Length: 200
Image 1 (cartoon, helix red, strand yellow):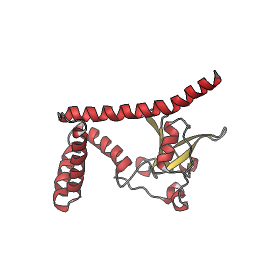
Image 2: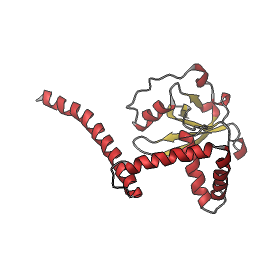
Image 3: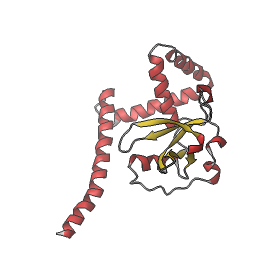
Image 4: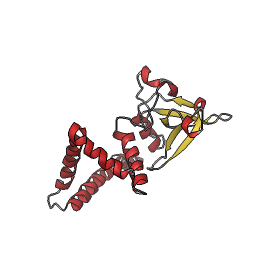
């Protein structure tokens, strides 16, 4: 009986992640196909990827780049739209842009007396412009969720974490179940103030 139970749980370990991953992929493909109105399975998703690549190529071209900058300028000036656009643009830029915001995992000391710490990502090296000298901003994603908290803490309480951003994110989202095993090169584990982060 114990053998059957062990096999069952081992089967769950393989079955659940595989089925959920396939289900999510199929859902995304079907949703995009429905948006595009294309009858061929996967055609809408392929068309969307192609469109994104074309837009990226045009946005990189010297001539058409100005047009995209004008459109972006309009979005950033419209009431309410500018808030929505700016937030989405900054989050997207943090993940896939040139100025990634989740590539510097850190450990934040929440309580010096007890040694309570939290794993997060350094997103701003300085908040002097906001009237908070000596402070930095750290984003703490929530486990098993797509939400998180932004903390403003003194720089002395932030310690760079010797791990890649993707590994740290997986560690946090999994509630600590994933292993932090990938060390960063020494030059990338410098103290926060050693890596200035430009504000836009």
